[in-house]
Structures are given as structure tokens and as C-alpha cells.
Image (cartoon, rainbow over all chains, first blue to last red; front, side, top):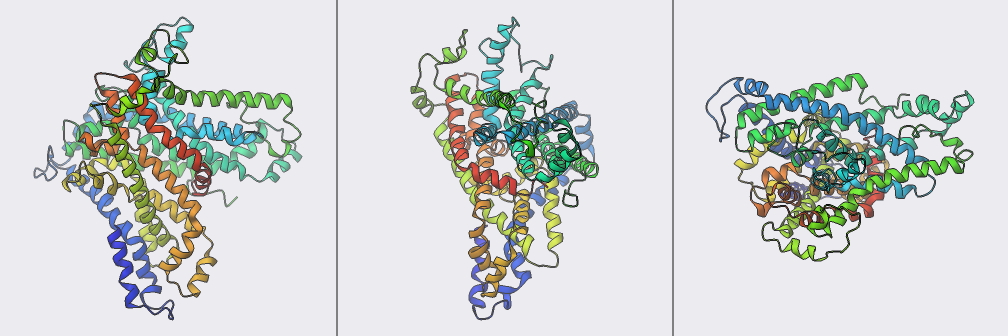
Amino acid sequence: MSTTTTRGVARPAPAKASPARPRRGLRGNPTFNFWLFTGPFLIGLVIFVFVPIGWSIWLSFFEARFTVTPSHFIGFDNYKQMLTNSDFTGSLLTFTVFAAFIVPTTWALSLGLALLVNRLRFMRAFFRSVFFIPTACSYVAAALIWKMSIFNGVRFGLANTIVGWFGVENIAWVSNPSPPWYWLVILTVRLWLQSGFYMILFIAALQNIPAELYEAAAIDGAKPGWQTFRFITLPQLRATSTAVILLLLIAAYQAFDEFFNIIGNKATWGQTPLMVLYKTAIGSGQDYGAGSAGAVILTVLICMVTLLQGKIMGFGRGEESK
Amino acid sequence: MTTTAPRIDKPRRKRRGGVMGNTGLYVCVSIAATLFLIPFYLIVRNALSTDPEITGENWKFFPSHIQWSNVSELFNDPLVDFGQSLWNSLVVAVLMTAGILLVCSLAGYGLARIPYRHANKVFYAVLATLMVPTSVTFVPSFVLVSSLGWVDTYRGLIIPGLFSGFTCFLFRQYFLGFPKELEEAARVDGLGYWGAYWRIVVPNSLNFFAAMATITFISGWNAFLWPLVIGQDPSSWTVQVALSSYMTNQTVNYHLIFMATAFSILPLVFVFLFLQRWLVQGIAQTGIKG
């Protein structure tokens, strides 16, 4: 990339090196400068985003095992294969359950933390840091702590030690699909990792709410506490909430790391769509055709949900108009 | 949490907040904070324990003996070259951060500030890539990268990740809010767009660049799926892939796993604490808040 950029700079400068004439020639030419600035990014975007997407769509109509330059056109067979593949459809269900739990709980927890931290008068920065710092952890590291120390299936795991105090037998937290204790493990990992980040967004938004609104509400007789929260704070946070929910959904679609590391690659339950795609295309199968078809299906689903959510919640129409 | 949460009301804060209310509030945050810190404690505790003390029947909160030799054992482990994977992660995260900042900030500025007839169309093309989550494109990207012969290389790990539509979008939003007068003064003084960008815009945006650098560095360091896909050979593993390999390994050395985890997290935690001010500002500024 850097070569493109330097070439772009080096050429126009000596050619039109007359500093006395600003906004003349290439230096001031908006079209040239637009491509000078955005060109490197756009070239990369085309090569590494648009081309793979196009290639993937093309591959999805071919029999493409162990090859990326297939010759056997099979129409929608890959799509049929993926949609009748119980692993893939099961993963879509897993994802739906996951999103249905993780999005509201993270929203509530991060908003709750933001409200708490925002009310503190002493040590506010300290507590904000404590809740924020898990953001620095990777999903792999967190999955490791959860799986091997907190929710270990045997006696020495922290969770089993604690439930042991109450006379409960050891629980196999992640090695068994029923009862589905693995959900507790998966959900708490993600809650711990991402709540702090969204808390920061909410704190920023809370501090932007004009104090006069609360004064006006008090004059109108609103009781502090639930009423103020319900009728002032929550509506004022609408734009932020919408953005947070959208970001949470997008993050949930990409769930891979903690599922892969906690539940493992061999289990047939508790898999996210990305895990199935990984196994299909890059694991032992090397079936690029079916993997691509799955990626296309997933992308279409995500686009539909995102657009639908945009329609329902009015993403993009901020609070400015109010 | 939610029961106490609604009790925010700024104007009255001074009058309320008696000793009792405050104590309750601080008890609440302290409990939550303890829960949030326990995992960090467990890493350090287990990293400095012996295996029997991690897996023993009578689990104790404090290890009876701190085992510093675990550090040298980790880096001399013949099975996984952990030092190499730390180095790989460092190289990838640093180069990736530098590359993304350069490429995406330029593009963001171009989209925000340079009047060009078709700029909107280009912007929509960038927006369209946001609709397709990056990790859904990993199958086709892997196909592309492997046909370029970039598997197991730094190129393969870094270059495909540089063209982040999201980062470009954030830079565009930021530059839209950058005071125009500063640039216009520079242009009147004879600087082209390029000169004005480097001599006026960038030096006045260092806070935002620092915030984006921190975010990019952290996500580069913590990335897992792409390095897992690209790193077929152990010598090209990043820290996260190496950690994951410990988990799926047959022989489990708990103390080594946790020491490795500590080495994967602690540098980042320190960076994080140090850069927090910019990070928080940056996140608040990015325009994510709608």
C-alpha cells in the first residue's frame, strides 16, 4: 500500500511545483486528491473484500472440494446441502438463542453499570476502569479461564467449589448438552468481556443529557428515581441504545472464539454458524463450495435482520431532531 | 443492578446521597467490581501455582507457595514456542495498527472533506461492506489468500485486515466534525489538500488517532479466527492461537496454560490502563453514540 501512496505524492509535486499558485493544477484538484486519499483504501477494499465476496458467490454454485478453481457447475445444490445440513440449521438456532439472551442482558448490565458509575462521587475513575478492563482480554484467554478454572467440571473448579458448599454435586458445565449448563458459561464470558465497553458509551450519553430536563421534570412533579428514569433518562438514551443493540447483534453474529474454545471443535451441539462454516470449508472437509453457500446464506440473513432492525428502531435518525 | 440503576437524578444529587444511600451505592459497585476482578486474580493465582494446587481437592484462594519458575518453564517448553508466538502477535498488531491508521484515516478524510462528484457513491460502497460482517467473509478471504500463497506469512495475517470499512467510517465521522476553518487557513496559505492534511489536520487530531490506535492494537492482538485460519504452521501462530492449542492439547499443564494466559493479557492490561483516557474519549467521540 505504501508504494502506491508514495508514488501518488511524488509525481504531482515536482510536476506542478509552483507554490505561488495555490489551488491550481493537480494539487488543488479535488478529483485527483479524492483518489489520492481514498485510492489505496479502495483498491484494498476491492481486492480483499469485494473480490472474495464475488468469488465466494461464484464458488457457491460449483462443486468445489479441495479446489478453488472448480469446473463442475451444480446450481443450487450447495445451498440445498447447507439448508438441509442439520449442523448448519442447528447453528442458526443456537445463534438465535444466543442473541436473544446476550443482547438484552448486555444492554441491561452495561446501562446499569453506567448509571451506577455515573452516580459515584469518589473513585469514579477507579470503578470505571475496573468494569472497563475486561475489554482488554481476548475471548480465547477468557474462555480459558472460564473453562479451566471457574466452570471446570470437576471438584476443583471455582463454580463447583461454591455449589459444593451448598451440598450440590459436581456439575459438568460444558461437556454435556443436557442440561444446557454451557449456556451459563458462554453467556457469562461474553457479559464479562463486553459490558464495560458499552458502559462507556452509556456514560458518554448520560453526561450529554442536559440537566435542565431533570429540573423541568422535577418542577412538573416527576418523582426522582423510576419516573425520571422512565420518562427522561431512557428516552434521552434512545439513540445510544439503538446503536448499542445494533453493535451487540453484529458482535453476536461473529461469535466464534468462545464457542470454539469452550465447547470445542468436536461437539455437534452448541455451534455457531461460523464454527460450522470453519469446519466445512477449512477443516478436514475443504468443501469451499458448500462453505461459500453457507457464507452467502448467512450474509443474506444478517442483511435482512439489520435492515429490519433499522426499520423498527430507526437507526440513523439520531436524537438531533428532538 | 437494575433496581438501584434508575436512581439517577443529577440536579438533586447534592441534597440526596445521604450516608445510607451512598453506602448502598458503594456496596453495590464494590460487589460488582469484585466479580469483575476475580477472573484476573484467578489467572495470576493459577499462573504462580503448581499443578496439584490448581487441580487439588481442597481448592484454596491463596496458593501456599508462589512458583516463579513457571515463567522459565513456559518459555523453555519444547512443545509450543510461546516466545515466538508472542513476537508474532506483536509484529502483527503493530504493523496492522500502523497500516490501518494510515490507509483508513486518509480514506476517511477523503470521503469527509474532498468535494468530488461521486464521493457519495464511493461512500455507499464502503457502507455496504459494513453490512457484511468481516468474519463471514473469512471463507472467501482464505481462498484468496491461500491462492496468493500467503498462508503462514505475516502478509497473510496483516494485509487483508487493513481495509476496515468500519475504521474508515469512524475516521470519516470524526473528520466531518473537525473545524473547517483550520484547514481553510492552511489552504489560503498555499498548502494543497495533502499538505494541509499532514501539517494541520493530523497534528490536531492526535487524540483521536491515539484512541483508534489503541482500539486497533487491542483487536489485532486479540484476533483469533483469522490467525487460526492462516496460521497452519506453529511457527506462524499468534498468542491467541497458541493459547487455544493448549486447550485442545491432550496433556494439560495447568500452570503453563495460565502463565501463558497471563503473558497474553498483562501487557495489554497495562497499555490499557495507561491509555484509558484517550480510549474513553475516543470511544465517546467516534460517533457510535448516534
